[in-house]
Image (tube, rainbow, N blue to C red; front, side, top):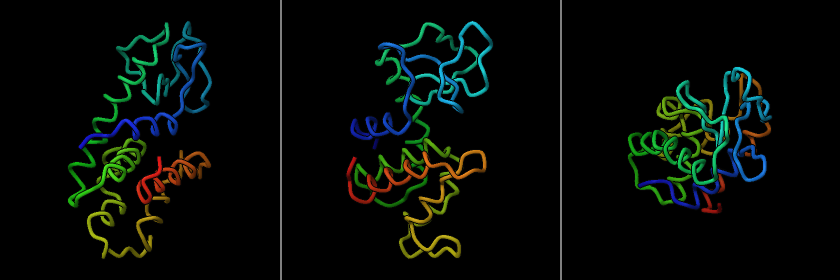
Length: 167
């Protein structure tokens, strides 16, 4: 299974992007503001839909929508693999898409070790911290140790996608 086009489009909305005109530009992931490409890039320099720029990549001239989508599809490959490798029960497409979005955002290792995976694989699982799958899912709401309204909203959107198939 791979993330569907509906899932990709939802992930684009959840990740957001920064454009000037019709070109995606480099931005600081922490602030969401474009960066001066004539200065050294900050840690967390990002382009497109959450693509962290690697040292050998040069996007100073911005990128097209097609390139941004291509980078996103390449970046989600690890998240898709994390879902396929860790979820042992059959999933619907919307469930796979929602789990891939979560894994993409929290990282493959965090996903693999999460209570979310335990609940999905075993509905009879019991956690002393999270009473159900929804609470385990929505607990991933912190950025740099602080509760993030953006992550609260993202988890809610993913949960609706997972639970009700609404993108």
